[in-house]
Image (cartoon, rainbow, N blue to C red; front, side, top):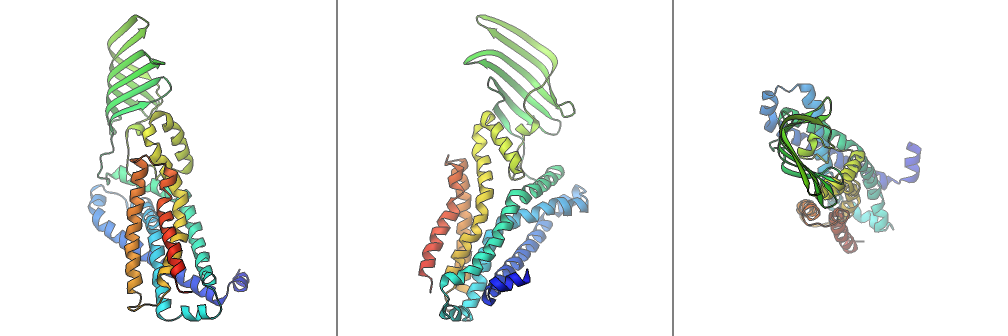
Amino acid sequence: MRTFIHRYLMVIDRFIIKKYLGTFVFTMAIFAAISVVFDISEKLDNFTSRHASLHDIVFKYYAGFVPFYLNLLSPLINFLAVIFFTAKMANQTEIVPILSGKASFNRFLRPYFIAATLIFIVSFFANVYLIPYTNHLKNDFENANGITDNDPTKSQVHMQIDKHTYVYLESYDPTNHTGYTFIMEKFNGDTLREKLIAQTILYDSVKRIWTLKDYSVKSVNGLREKYVDHQPQKDTVLDMRPTDFIVYDNVYAAMSLKELNKNIDKERLRRPEVLNNLYYEKFHRFVYPLSAYVLTVLGVALSSRKVRGGVGLPLGIGILLCFTYIIIEKFSIVFSIKGGVPPVLTVLIPNTLFGILGYYVLLKAPK
């Protein structure tokens, strides 16, 4: 391996790759340490009041917390790392001898693309395989210890469970697996055939059945109607689970790719309004790692010119662009979920806009 590297990578290539990856990893470690320290200070009361074990805190909560936030911030950390060490090289007049030694600017970019490719591979693997698993650990710990501040229960849920059956649930209590004011309607085309109303509905997680309590049923057969009123109890199997009435933060981010595809197929019939969320999460995992290339090109183009003030000006511009990237990323989610824009397009918005900006700045960069 060492022979291969020395054969195909020149000294300047190894120098830039080492600087790039070293700065990137060091910055990632700094961000991880700061994030953990601030989070511990914020969540310490929750940990102690819930008597969470040290093993669960370290290997469940922070085993999910650290990868999630590092993956979230990795494009911005990558961008700042490229700007910092490239601007430092330009300030120390290290780039001028490279370009004046008959090396083209594209040749100068080659080690950056090699390092960006390594980051892309790690980021792609993390987004598709690792992050969903670690998010699942983190979410399970938060839900079990009541760390999340949001009420996870949905209210007034309308859902279609097969071609002919529609259900409505006014509210659901996850602590005792009980729903209140349950209505199930069965249709034959546009004609109502049966309507069931139950005051409460209870899920048995062992038998995987629902128990209807204090229910009434009205059956319609042409002009004839049959009404059964105030029956005490009935057990039935329904194609729905308590998870259909509970939602936690990052619930889709904690699903594997196989689970996402399975939920897309299921929700296409049940709740088409959440399909954009699922599709956005799926496409985002494949597109997000491409930011390694986009932001690397933009970072090199911005910081390869020697300017007065050293690395301060390029770094300031980089921080401003980082906030802009975050804002565009958030707006793209809103466009997909609330605006009805196809998710396959919205996931491309941040990288496309910054890619165009990077290409323009690259054309203007000193050659």
